[in-house]
Image 1 (cartoon, helix red, strand yellow):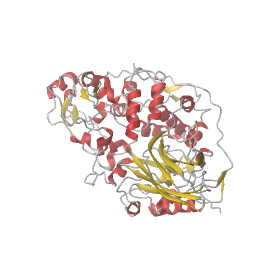
Image 2 (cartoon, rainbow, N blue to C red; image 1 turned 135 degrees about the horizontal axis):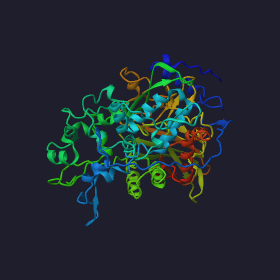
Image 3 (cartoon, rainbow, N blue to C red; image 1 turned 60 degrees about the vertical axis):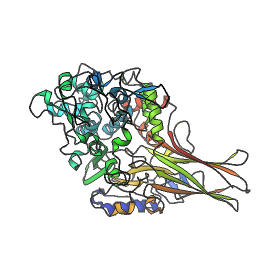
Image 4 (cartoon, rainbow, N blue to C red; image 1 turned 90 degrees about the vertical axis):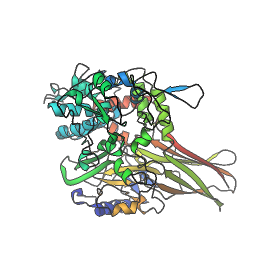
Length: 612
């Protein structure tokens, strides 16, 4: 069956987007590079991939970013080093469960190895921005603004207030060599904008953020406001925190900020300023699509529609999980009069250990201070990821030579799993062993290069693996992910060219009802469940059940194991990115670092059961 996929997303509403994704699913809408005898969300299962991405040979280049000066004290912001001079303290110790062993919880030390701290030095971000600039060079100004506003917020705020130039890469003249305006990538610590930028998502962004517009659409997609001093005296710049009785005079004297309580810093609305990101979609040719808003990141909206939202049965803010409160009182800064209760650790927990490992391995090339505690942070995040979901097994036994069992996955996070950027995926790795320990079935085996056996997109990046309710073959793998489509109705890996979801079966959080989303006109058309998961009766409210039917022959005892695994950057997505590596330096640099590593994914949860 063949359909001509000519899509004008400028006229698509929620019902039209749903109709399109269902139509593409029914027709195996994985693009013109596949031949299929089975449906799904676009490939996988019984799909013959007849074309692979043409990937150029790597050039082996590496970045050379300068180190920055984090001790700056500017007109509008101060650097993290300036803050850490008081908020890193040997006395910030808590007792661990091991008798006599303590742990330091200094704010700057906890923060400096997080992805937030390194948001501007993130080499994957560099590669993606460079890819978009290569695809759409006439949109250079838009791309710079939309990407830098959240990845380098101090620099963005500074340059907006001072009317300075800000871009990630050098702006070149028509000769391709003469630099008209230098980018952050080629500056160093002698430059004020560079120092502000390389501080990442830093102290004086979150603690200076004004509460006025938080929670409104205006505040999101980088719409945070830094108002500054209400009197014109820099010492009256607010420094918001959780406590009602801050050390006002001490902080004003030492840091030039007026400490005051601002409970908004502990709300999900403050995180939503960058973690709800709506993009004004463009066509595959780079032309604006009128009135098409693509919900690229909707973590806050996911939370709002979950049991974790304010007033919900599992009420919890973003900070509750990603900045857990201590159950012990602790000194929070030098000169503090005494310990504070309910202190929130500044670990900014997150599951991207793969990128943290790259930051650690290539600290010198990425301009990161050597000797930071990345190993400890990676292990902490690895354990944090294990709290994201539960996997359970139930057996129906062996009947007529077929082993039948169900894998149930329950999302425990307050947002979708995985959430955020569409390179991420979570998948099931299932093995069946016979009584002698021999492998008789395996679905979802990951190779050393990060590709997953049986997953269509890892052979051809224009395809994607369908959502399954039942799996009967090793070529079928349950992959929870978002697949985006462009104005031609084809899969795209470009954020700017994404205008709807071809597939979105990311595990919803508890309380999010996929049917209710369809009827909620207050939500963007591109927010919801799309593809075959929409009609899967057991995919809803934070859970999914996948039934496995495996031909095993003789009736004997089998051991089944099911792992839920997380991969922050899918192999197929990388193959598409690599196609630009021969002409885009930042992509080749990222590829050099990526291919030197062995860590490709992490285990979230595992269940094992003996069946017969």
